[in-house]
Structures are given as C-alpha cells and as structure tokens.
Amino acid sequence: MSSKTEQLTDVSISKKIFNWAAVAFFVYMVLVAVGTVSSGFKLFSGGTAGAKEIFEFATNPFIALLLGALATALVQSSSTVTSVIVGLVAGGLPIGIAIPMVMGANIGTTITNTIVSIGHVRDKEEFKRAFSAATVHDFFNLLAVTIFLPLEIAFGFLQNVAQYLSHFFVGDTDMSIKSFNFIKPLTKPTVSFIKDTLDFIPGSNLGLAMVAVGILIILVSVTSLGKVLRKVMVGRAKTILHNAIGRGPVAGITSGTAVTIMVQSSSTTTSLMIPLAGSGVFTTKQIYPFTLGANIGTTITALLAATAISGPASEVALTIALVHFLFNVFAVALIYGIPFLRDLPIKAAEKLAIVGTENKFLALLYVVGSFFIIPGLMIFAVR
Image 1 (cartoon, rainbow, N blue to C red):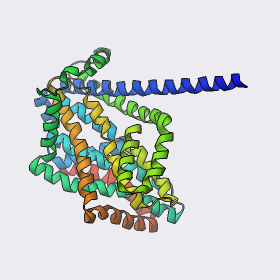
Image 2 (image 1 turned 90 degrees about the vertical axis):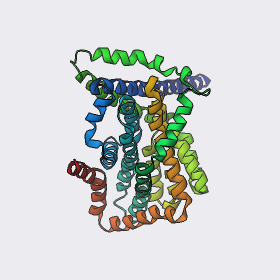
Image 3 (image 1 turned 120 degrees about the vertical axis):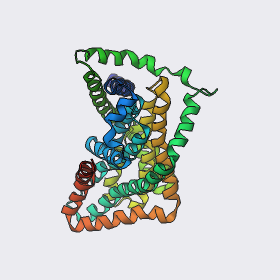
Image 4 (image 1 turned 45 degrees about the vertical axis):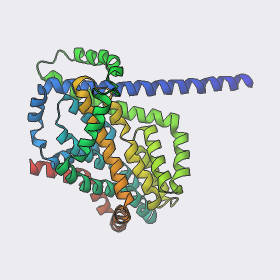
C-alpha cells in the first residue's frame, strides 16, 4: 500500500516539475517570438521610414483603435496582440499609432466572457445576470477609451509618463538595467535559427514571413502558457477568486490582478466569473472590481515581451508596454474613484442585459456587431 502511495507521489511530483518546465519554455518562446516579430518587421519595412509607409492607412488614431479591437476579438487574447504591438514598435511602428491599438486591444479582449455568458441563454434570469456581469467589462473599457484617447491625442500624457519611466530603467542613468539585459543572448540563437530556416524566401518577403511566424508563435505560446499555468495555479486562483470577490473593491481589484498575472489571461479570469454571476452567487456590482483587476494584471505579458528587446529599440518597446499598464491603472483609479463614473458601466450593462434577455437575437447581434461587423465596416469606410 505504501509502495503505491509513493508511486503516486512520485508521479505527482513529476507532473509538477514537467508543468513548471513547460511554463519556463513557453515564457521563453514568447520572448523569442517578440524578437522574431521585431527583426522581421525591420527587414520587411526597411526601418522606421518604411514602417510609416506601411502603416499609413492607420495614421488616424481612430482606425488604429479599431484595428486593435478587431485583431484582439479575432484571436481572443489581448496578451497576444499587445505582445505583437511591442515587437512592431521595436521594429519601427510609430508609437502614436501603437497607443490607440493597445487601447483597442482592451476593448477586443472583453468578447470572450461575453461569449461565455451566451451559454446561460436557456434560463432567462441566469442569462440576464451573466450577460450583465460580462458586458460591464465592455462598458468600462469603452468609457476608459472615451476618456483617455482624446486626452492622449491632445496632450500625450500616457506616452510622456511612460517615456520618462522607460528612460529611467533603460536610459543612461545610474539605475539603468541595460547592462543586465540577459534576454537577448538567450533568445538571439533561436531568432537567428528561425531567420536561417526561412532564408529561402527572397527579399523583404523574408521579413514578412518572420513577422507571420513570430505572431503564430506568440499565439500558440500565450495560449499554451495560460493552459499550463491554470494547471499549476488553478487551485490557488479559485480560492483567491471565491474568497476575495465579496470582500470589497480593494480586495476584488487586488485578487483580479493577482489571478490574471498567474494565468496571464484576463479573458480566462473574467470568464471564470460569469458562471458565478449567472448562478446568482455574486452580483455584477461585486464582480466589477475583480474585472478591473484583470485589466491591470493582463499588462504583465507586454511588460515581459518588452524585455526581449535590446539596443536602441529597447526604450520605445518598454514605453508602449508601460503605456498599456498606465492606461489600465489610471482608468481604474479615475473611473472607479469617482462615484458617478463608477456606476455608469454597471447601469449600462444592466440595461443591455434586460434588452438582451427580452430579445436573444439582439444579444447575439451585440456580440457579433460590436466586435466584428462595426469595426470592420468602419475601418473599410474610413480608409
């Protein structure tokens, strides 16, 4: 009997070791992928000047916002899209275009939990509670963009603060961490291997192929990393979730941030809450702060991706990653800190849930139209 117990213990330990090794591997692949996107974009665009020509259609911040939202809705991962944006910025994408894209990614990522809420459609009351809890995330991010995008266009506040902080960490100050950058030596051999493997592709198309491969690696790695992290952390994550949501806004925001950092996916953490809301365990108002914490926690992936960039582009890569972080932190502080603004997403979500409950087709139309049809048509029309 004791022998069987020891064997089971050994298997359990082996699984844990394997899972943590998988975590390390997928983190490494995210870093490699970002480096590949950056290098490929430089080859394809011919530098910053070429990048500006390639993205000329997105010089309008509004189009960039829609592109970020649409891309994130398609891959259902803001972590993936923001990691790609970090690589593109390092390769020459103007930061003025990248900032609205990052804001758009925040909007697009909310589609996952809204889709999850559709699973409660058979029960009218469950669906109303679930749909309200899901769309409160939508309305918060829309309100945040409505407030901060015009301010950013007019004053460049987020960019200026992020540039100051990135220069502090990567610049020529005594606190610089540039000399401690060990990421590039680790990732360079793999990036070079990918480039050499694709070397049969002629001209600038080689760069385009590297960007495509890098994006594919990011998509696979971030998705796989989330799955593995859920295996090693899901018990703790669920405990934190159940214990913290009902303990007030500070605990909710903190736990939402912590759980999302653990699984590196705001879509995962917010989607976990929808069945709880549908079953009536928590109200939309109780779940709301946890959702805001998920917004903050998801920025860790872009910050991690920025460490894959070194040299002259390292500062601008860290800048756009910090913009993502600052945008979410300031949005939570401003909107949740002012009672009038705080209640707007809840009221809008509850009203939409009533309409969607009465007409299920309108609820489905909201999901498809808001995240796919309207952004796609508007991009086409403005272009």
